[in-house]
Length: 402
Image (tube, rainbow, N blue to C red; front, top):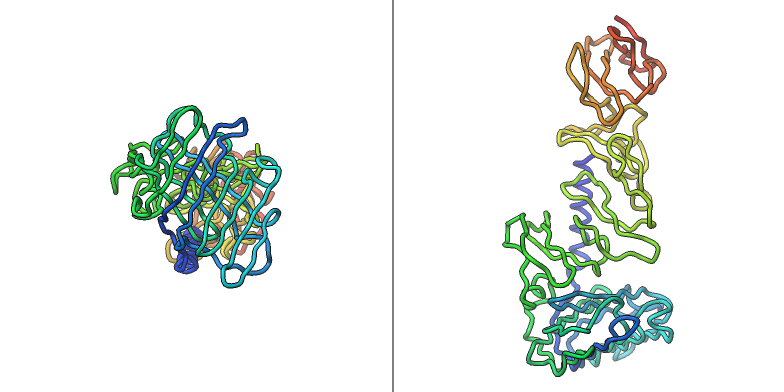
């Protein structure tokens, strides 16, 4: 897939994503109480709200819970969160007051650090469990709790006036007011906690974020944002520091776009592009291959669907690479280098620059060849000094000619 095609596909995906989420709700809610207490397994927490207006996703088969439950706790000094997948531990029911329930007797072991969840539409939202790595040995100050149930998001702000205790390994706050937050966006949460992540339109992003948050520029939104290690990996570009399933790590994957993507790969596995253009190699999201691509904007390693260059894949026979020009489909070309007649450098890594002639059209240029790949062997353009690798216009093996 060429860069223009990739960008078009990305924009189409974003449009579809926006349409799918158009009905999703994100709403500050009131909350009855929030409690944290120190334990060997991390902070033990309890959150309860009886706000009847909290966003609730539809219940339907199969009976394995919502598409996911994410609980995040924001304080000025740190941020923590857990994610609970559908499946084991969940039950649900419809009717006049649909509900989701979750129970994990082994928490913080077992399927997740969450011990129990009781979520009943229009009635209550109650969750309790553990936040691994979250510490309450020092005062936290104001806290925001954000809960995503499927595509629906609620948040509650426990301001200083709601805090009953914040010392000795215990945090306890009650009666959070829904009016304390304008919305559940991370930027809003950062603001109410008294931290600041860059001015709008300033790509330097010199501000700070709560806890381990990193202030970085979101090239698509054109503004700075805080990225946290508790965020899902796929949404933490360009930092790529988010959460992954056990045994995997969040890594950057070259896409050819202005910013790398982020994906989860097994620990120690090299992501696409890490070995450098044009050798490429490395891990891509499932179903894609890591291929070298060159364009007017430079050369890079990108993740593309399997298939030939020009057919929406990125594969070319070595030493050709998929090449893109504005207004045309990608096609396979050598990597151009140096200047005639001496050619010389300009090739990546240990590749070398050699004369390449297309017979029948009086076209000659300098092209990069893999190490030790002789003209005529089908994999390169190397010829003795003074000769040019000459390839028929219609294709076929080349020959070294004066």
